[in-house]
Image 1 (cartoon, rainbow, N blue to C red):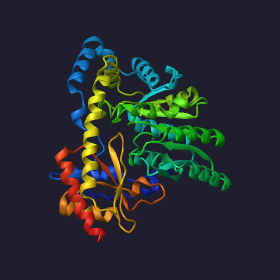
Image 2: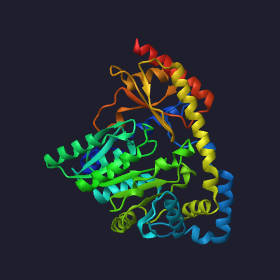
Image 3: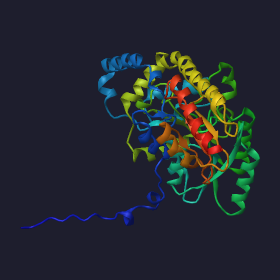
Length: 413
């Protein structure tokens, strides 16, 4: 009788050079752990579902299906549904990006797809991309997967240190490396919660102009500010751009619902035309239903109506976390004080390792956070960590921070 034998193949030899350098996201790995019952999670960075205007979205969907159901469920243009593109033009102009036209906008499946597409358009292996220290893991992964050279620049309390950036640019030029891009998250940065000052936004453009670089401005949190008086301090870098050096990326995930998977990019037409070609090879087009829903929510004023509630929702949670940190944490530990967004950043004494301590926090106190090292392109940050205040209720935030402080205090002795 014939017996079928199966051999497990090693596919390593088939992987491309890009695939060889891919790394698993520390945030995704933590999501599996922190979703377990009984865990107080400060690791999940997803918007809180309590902020989603579900009933209004339901009404919008019903209206769309009644009036244009057949076209809403069909394929569409690669660069996006025209009604949403036009709505984003208006949205941009309210943010003082006044010169934008519909030909300079592409709709993407979340801002992460925009990062991936821009990287594939602009990065050759070895090209230098400058990152804030720390910076967003998703962008680090997208550009590292393309074999870019990632160079980190430290942040002060008001954002990326311009003098250090200039020094790193000049060093890379002298070494013969092709410096090409600066990646920044100017508002309530993920993971640090730091906001780039207006002065540094303008200086960053001057640096890009002097050294012939492009800026990728990733702004998913800019509308989630806690104090209305801050609005004029949060003008996009793109609003100061007169030469087309800034590629502005944003999303509706944080101010509407991430399940609609709708992001967008503003860029010069020459880049948008290439992006159109690259996107055709990726997904042909995004969801026309999702894009019509977002456009309908903009047209009906649903997003603007809910923004004050979203801001207060996260402001209250952030304040509880800040108050709890102040009450419970030992004096050797420091943290940022964000004025918007979903995160803050904690720095432990240099002798401590947040990854080692995490296991104690999970086993002893059932509290989770995200370790800081993966947010650093230079391998540093072992003594840092990110806390997200978006998921847990205020009681759990207080209890969770007290539990973390108990473990941290034991390591600080």
